[in-house]
Every structure is written in structure tokens, then in C-alpha cells.
Amino acid sequence: MNNKLHTLETNSQLASEKLKKCELCPRRCKVNRLKGQKGFCKAGVNPAVYSYFAHQGEEPPISGQRGSGTIFFTHCTMHCVYCQNYSFSQLSDEKEVTTEQLSAIMLALEKSGCHNINLVTPTHFVPQILEALLLAVQKGLSIPILYNTGGYDLVETLKLLDGIIDIYLPDMRYGDNENAKRFSDAPDYVKINQKAVEEMFRQVGGLAADSSGIVRRGLIVRHLVLPNGLASTEKIFSFISKNISKDIYISLMSQYHPVYRAHDFPEINRPLTKKEYEEATKLLFQYELRNGWVQESNIEMDSMLLGTNIKKM
Image 1 (cartoon, rainbow, N blue to C red):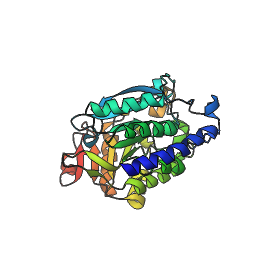
Image 2: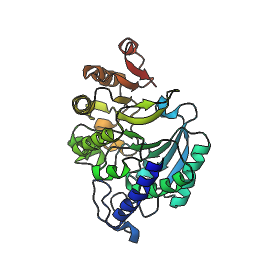
Image 3: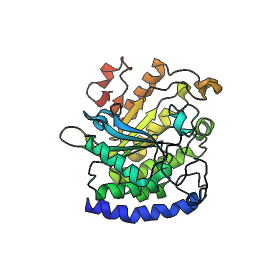
Image 4: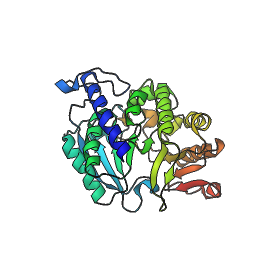
């Protein structure tokens, strides 16, 4: 913990400097957030928290029995037209807090018994989060810190988190930039996402759990299957298998539902079909990615799951 405290002291100062000319995310807006200027994400100088609670709906070794201490931040560096959290990620339902208050939230979640602190959509608030973590660690915060991100992260920002973040939970949302641009306004997503996940794996490695099966350290990659193959799932699994590790834990998500502005895009204006999800699941085995979770709704995969580490959520 002394090493983490020292790293926090150094890196929180380095990160705070970036607010003068914000380049925390790939947008590189270069606005001075310390003077009230706002860029693409619309985030200001103070962290904005939509809600926080003990989340029971994350992957089993993250939520465990007592829940994951989840903090949902307002705003986002992506503009996904189907975002289920659009009311606070896109429409900016402001609930600003101070870093002292954010620190108190973290300590309260730990006191309530949560297994970890789960920072959801944190990229644009990295400096404020580091400052809050420094205060919290000084007051005894000791549970793992989890970085839960859409995967549109700069390596240079992630390096400020090295030695601080224990668990990375990134999305690998798209395997091609055309759809990343069309549906998330992120035309350079693929290469940035790949480099980010490689850096995350370099920092924390494969999954490590305690004796009760709760994750203490490591990388879990989430992938949301989209209708009509628009996430390019096979390209993503091929990249993971060839460039990261076949042992990486994958959380394959089937809960896509057309919300927010999805009705403006006919190709995604419907739920995912069972067949589409089954095809994505088969790709896990094709690329020898045998660790992770599939959704409970995928009821016909029992025979394929036998003898593997792919489990149902």
C-alpha cells in the first residue's frame, strides 16, 4: 500500500496538470478545464457522479456476495447512439462533487462491505479520481480499484494509473472504425482500443482471485454483441487471441437493446437475436478463448461449455 500511496502522490499531480490543456482522451480537446472551458465530453473541473451503490449485477467474481462498489460518472468520451446510460452519459445530468466528497464515497462503499471500488466511465475524470484516491488511501482505503471503461483510452493516460488500478474492465466495442464512427462518433476507435487493452494487460496481467473467488487483480475484456454483426466480433476475438492472450477472461454480453437514438439507425433498431449471440459464442471457441462468461439467456450452449472455463452469468 505504501507503493500505491507514493504513486498516487506523484501521478495525481501529473494528471492535474493535464486539466490546463486537456488531452486525457483521444479527442485531445486541449481546453483549459481549470478555467471552466469544456470539450467534447462536456466535463468540468469537478468530478460529476450520477450514482453510487453496491452493484450486484457485474461479473460474478467482481460482484461476489457483497457487491461491487460502483461509482457511475456523468459524461463520456464517446457518443454511442444506443447507450443505455444516455440520460447521464449523453444528456449530462450534472451532479458535481468535490474530490473530498468522492473520497468519502469510496470509503463509505468499502465500509459497507463492497469487494472493490468500481469506477464506471472514468477517463475524463482521471485527475480528480487520483486526487480522491490519494485522500481515501491516506484514510485507509485498501480494497482493489477497478477501472470500468468503454475502451477509448489513451495509453499515456493509462500509464498514470500504473500501480494504482488493480483490475481493468474495458470494452472492446468495435473491430472496424466505420461502425465505431457511425454509432459512437469514434472514427479511430479500433487502434486506440487495441493499444489501450495491451497497456492494461501489461500493467495487471491475467486474472488473479482470492480464496473465495473474488478478483483481486487482472484484466477482463467485455464485448457487447451488436445486431447484424456490426461489432465485428470475429476481428476482436482474433486480435485478443493473437496479440494479447488466449487465457484472457472475456465477458460476452447479449443485452443489446435499441434505446436513445438507435431508432435513427435501421440496422441496430432491434434487439439481438438468439442466433446472433450463439454465433458470437462459437467464435470464442474458434479462437480458443476459453475463459470467461456468457449470458444466462444463451440456454442452448450447455454442451459447448462442458470442459471449459466459460461460465454462465
